[in-house]
Image 1: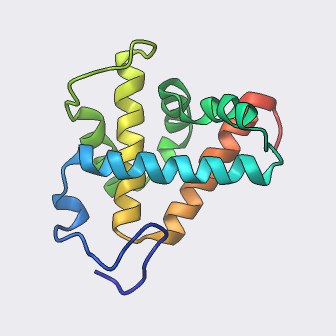
Image 2: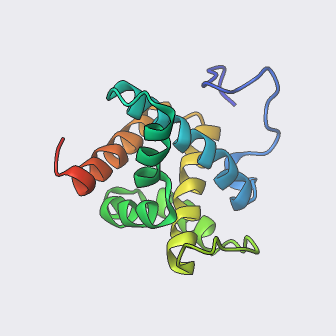
Image 3: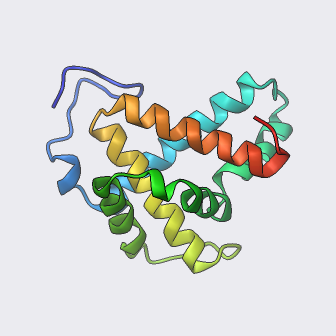
Length: 146
């Protein structure tokens, strides 16, 4: 593993390589990383009231929103990234939120697994690039701006 540490990484290292980790573990980490990017983006855009932050975040973090954004960026993913996404999408989590379609939930899990993979792999440049594209895509779909 590289010497670089990304936000949230401690002095402890993950013993397994990102490819060896369970896809749901990658999605667990990816969910947190994705959420941090969304929260930073919203505050940077001037959304500062807690109730407004929560409402605005839903546009980015719902299973439906993540599935839609994945479809829009899928053609820009490398074969390795598509493989990681598919592993996450096909992982059996055991439950689906009641307000999400199964297909959307599975796609969002795949996207979160990909974000987690990039994070654990410490591929900060690609993580930044992908998250920027995601945030811009959601903004375009929501408001027609950026």
